[in-house]
Length: 163
Image 1 (cartoon, rainbow, N blue to C red):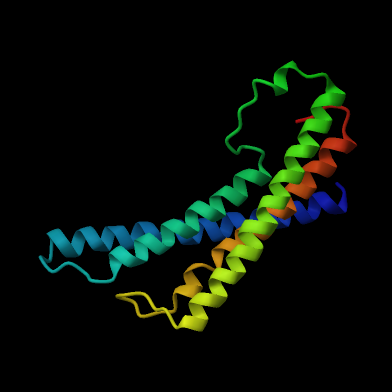
Image 2 (cartoon, one colour):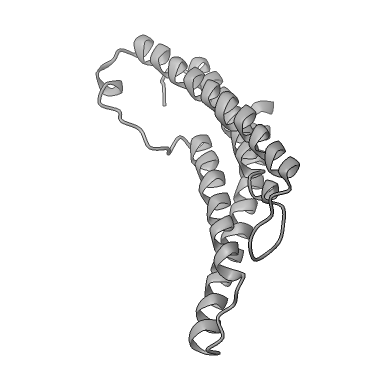
């Protein structure tokens, strides 16, 4: 196993752990929301907001994770008709576009969004936490997507067959 594979496996495990924790808290939050509404007849004020924030985290971290597993949504009609060399080049272009998007939108845009939310002092309605913390997942996911896209591009050019 190469050093790159060892690092990728560690990043996979970290993301899996993060996703399990966030999704577990999301399930508990929704269960408490339902229980407080129907069993206690006193709906909790904060659970809806927590569920919304956790859903954002699950969605973006999940997108990062499936990028690493090569399970992201793709239209492969063209891919199935290309020769191995052309497929390799097309995959490289796709990886480069993904990296450019992650840098421009998720890293630069996400960091700007976080900065402006903290600078403006915007806080969530019920939890009263700075909204910047909610948006931290955008550049974090962008970092993971960049990492996985680079690893996938390296793997595509090292092997005889393209995944």
